[in-house]
Image 1 (cartoon, rainbow, N blue to C red):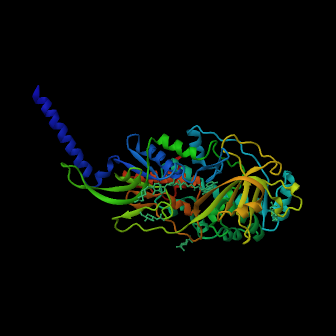
Image 2 (image 1 turned 135 degrees about the horizontal axis):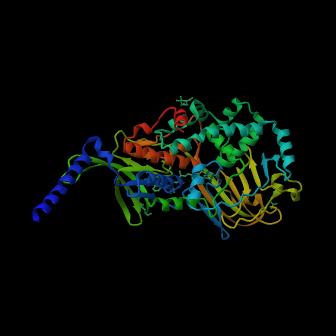
Image 3 (image 1 turned 60 degrees about the horizontal axis):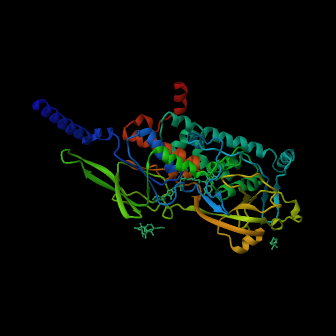
Length: 507
Ligand SMILES: Cc1cc2nc3c(=O)[nH]c(=O)nc-3n(C[C@H](O)[C@H](O)[C@H](O)COP(=O)(O)OP(=O)(O)OC[C@H]3O[C@@H](n4cnc5c(N)ncnc54)[C@H](O)[C@@H]3O)c2cc1C
Ligand SMILES: *[C@@H]1O[C@H](CO)[C@@H](O)[C@H](O)[C@H]1NC(C)=O
Ligand SMILES: *[C@@H]1O[C@H](CO)[C@@H](O)[C@H](O)[C@H]1NC(C)=O
Ligand SMILES: *[C@@H]1O[C@H](CO)[C@@H](O)[C@H](O)[C@H]1NC(C)=O
Ligand SMILES: *[C@@H]1O[C@H](CO)[C@@H](O)[C@H](O)[C@H]1NC(C)=O
């Protein structure tokens, strides 16, 4: 009886040896599942990446998600007088299909949105004001801007329509190796063109009036991106889509999507700041020849500096010094820095009575607005302000003059006490959040690469096309698919031309 058991033991050793040989010999090496995957950053980009990586690589591959702050990143709430308010990314478009899917999958809920009245202030007076009478608004819009508003919806819809192809391509598992390739597959040369010019140039070319661009378009850019009509045409269109109806947000706070995705992905959360990533060569165990390249991630946690090695790394945080601040060691050629700056936006929440006379109202009792947008004027110290409801227990909008309300104010610089006192007749509390919010757009902007190194990927380059939750989710799915196809050498799933035509015949 000893002989066969010895034999099977020997066979096992032999098999194991053959497996190791297989693992370490040339192209075969990458056919086995990766040992470990790291995701850096637990915002919507990183957590959705973990979710998509799990879908692709299966249940057994360990995935670590590093976060130096709070899960959610730029999706965050602040507390004012016992209630939480959305302080970062707040509204989601009805056609943001990844976000919609996450919310459904995670069993989160979406409260009913409520209307309000918007006015555009130019520093002296309101150049446009909505009233509670819908037909009157329509006539006013026509009177001021002719058919521009209607044409704008069509113009934006056309761009959105093209962008929506991404969902079909991703549902069929196709990936792109650069942001340019991804956008080109969706909108062809036209997309690359509008990325290279300002929203003002794009819209003038399409025949919109300067007055409409200077007032409505500028106001919307300032609310959404804290910048004027010098931002690129693509992010400009995304921003205009953000003025559509049907926008929504998540009950309890948008960041719940991030905690939910992290949980669903069964990834391990590691609290710590990643400081550096170094390429290391590790010899395969005693018996196997050949060497494997690994990425060694060094991070700072409460128990000091620590290291871990990974086969695949996804970076889901802006690679700028003021943000992720990660140093790449020992790479040749070196991984270049993307030093283009992010734009600072300050969010201030104030509970108080608005000072309508500050906005040129002779008779403040007529003031009914819940949202004040602005256009360029050097004497303005705010970009916009609007009343907000807490992320839980939303109440219906009351007349802002009758009771003190919570106002959310966007400004480029922190507000001084004097400035707050000008905006409010009286107030009892305020709270401030300063963001490196989104790229400072100045087209033509260069896109950082998605592939930083053979198995290291960067998600946030897509923000240079447009920064939004859905864009991070699209980029996360693309990076997860790209990492997967490159690992298993499915090159026919990457950068394919004419997907539109091909998928038509596949249906
Ligand atoms: C004020 C404001 C309003 C906005 N409004 C909207 C909106 O209405 N709708 C919309 O769709 N989008 C909006 N956006 C944009 C949207 O919030 C972002 O595009 C999106 O949240 C970015 O997600 P992300 O995961 O890519 O990056 P982030 O959310 O920035 O996540 C990166 C994470 O990585 C962590 N991290 C960074 N460096 C390291 C490191 N070295 N080690 C470990 N962890 C690290 C950070 O702490 C962070 O949690 C808004 C943004 C701001 C600031
Ligand atoms: C966009 O601008 C870049 C840099 O200026 C240039 O290299 C590229 O060819 C331009 N692309 C288009 C489509 O105009
Ligand atoms: C690590 O974190 C500690 C505590 O936050 C800090 O004092 C230290 O400077 C950090 N070290 C590095 C190398 O960043
Ligand atoms: C980036 O990190 C280095 C150390 O890793 C530190 O010396 C430097 O101050 C950091 N820069 C910023 C802007 O935080
Ligand atoms: C309100 O605005 C007016 C006009 O700018 C200003 O004179 C006044 O000081 C502001 N504050 C109060 C409390 O009225």
